[in-house]
Image (cartoon, rainbow, N blue to C red; front, side, top):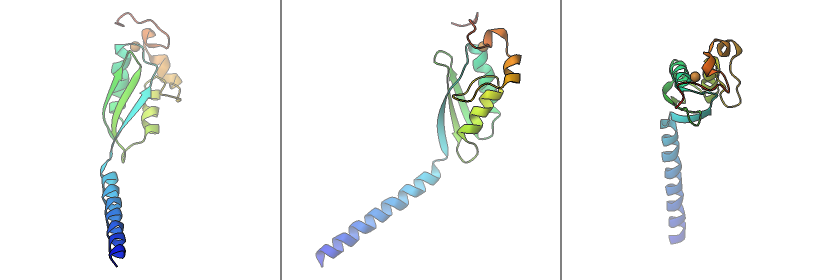
Length: 122
Ligand SMILES: [Cu+2]
């Protein structure tokens, strides 16, 4: 009888843990995404960050020019990594496997084109 009780008790504990965990998961709507871009200078950084900021659900973004990595904090119930990559593409830059939008890329300053050596690059 004692054994049955302890099995029952551990069953309740496991169930409780599962419930608490699922509540936590629903609560965690803030997600972080890292995107490899084709940015080359501080101007690129400004362009991309401004563009991504307009995307619904994006809380903040920061591009590290040195590594070309864009870190985006976003609300996962309002947007998706796909949409954010598309926003980067529409600003004229590559976003991971998504190539830069051709029209937007054409409009970029010469120093912001892929492989360009920018004057204000530190
Ligand atoms: Cu640039």
